[in-house]
Image (tube, rainbow, N blue to C red; front, side):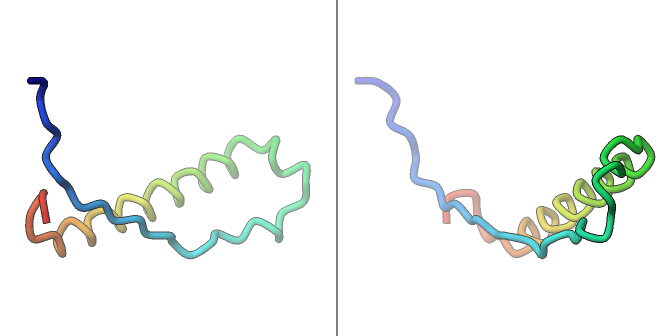
Length: 61
């Protein structure tokens, strides 16, 4: 028999939207603005992952 995968619990969490409607369309060409926005997204995701990790009881449940 092949390896049987163990059951795991998955959590999907959606964060608050990051408003970008205040920027004009040409702002997409601004590398510093894009760096700041991507850094904000990365930090938000990382913070959410840490928060969920603290709440997790086990890998399997």
